Image (cartoon, rainbow, N blue to C red; front, top):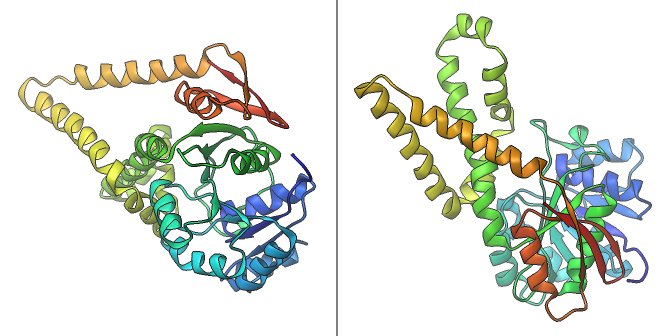
Length: 325
């Protein structure tokens, strides 16, 4: 696999700042750039190399053949890519954006010859900015590393190695499958949390006094920065709309049943069964697997592993070690 690559992170908020910290903690030479003077100064104060000169950071990446990590909100990706094209067009490129198909599309338009592999660490908090980040944010987390029909598996391996260095395990899947699933388990919950919080707030001081664990658990992510939530939910419009329709259909059925018969058994039982099914998947015993990236069917093997909820936990040259339930 060769020497471990340096890392240049563009965007130093919660996720980008954590990538920079984690890469440095793993022993990689890493630096970052951001258009936020506050985040850049905070990173420097914490002992990291950071700048507001994005072009300069990318030139350094080109000189050192670093991997460039785009850690900016989805709407900013298209504004940053021309700088990548000008200053670091031959660098390995990945991203940590929460929506994958739109990023894949814009990279294809703006930087069609890029050595690109999309990624998404499934980690975060309701906080934002450099100060919210941590070198251990990704420890034990799933980090999606996308496998498309034309993905260069050497680039995929480099991105997977960075994720593993950060303490995550790697889940291979393609951009479309990623976006459909995160619409269900991330983006819809953000919308539902917003609705629950807005409805709860109508209850005023008494609601605040009585709100307990179920309300707090259901509304936690409503405290996330609104602009970031808008970026990921609106950016995943194509996948989120049918999932939202599905949720509205279930809520409509619950409303109709409550109004006509006074019963909610179907809705409550379906939810209980759903969480039990997910828990069963999560607690099932693991079977070890190995994938050879040099094999002709490596791409098929990676996608099959991801589809079954499998993960990569170690990397040795071309040989990936993982497990599947």
